Length: 191
Image (cartoon, rainbow, N blue to C red):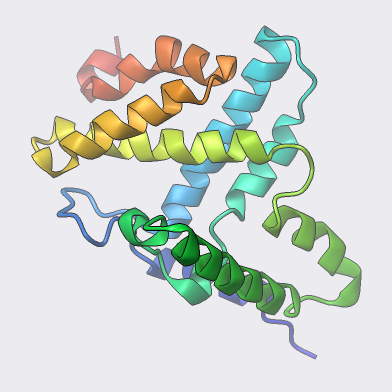
């Protein structure tokens, strides 16, 4: 039998993000998931090594790689639509749940528990992945603003407010110690 899970995962590269906004630099779900994995790993390392709180950076990175995999079937639902009201959020959760079930069915039985746990964000890293996802969105906004694309101005401000409101020391640490670098040119970063 031929299993389709990994062929479906490879389709993440075909799904554009930020569809309602003019983008200077297009971003797809696969690129986004990679950045979220990098950031989730970093936040987990900060939590573990700076804050002294047990956390698995490897698990956080793996969960982040798959956090938007259901979008293979749903597409990237724009935030204003997805979070319009509780009825819309509940409906989207049901659709997402169906997508996860469909994805997991594309694996042999022996592999399903591991990938189902990653897709369902089990393993104690849900808050880290959510924060990394939000941080990735903020970085995208900052990068778009750097190109002069003011379309992302209000999204940047509201996303930063949401990041600060999370009350996560590892997020604040990242923002305070690493975020300024995203506003620099390659020449400034090479110094």
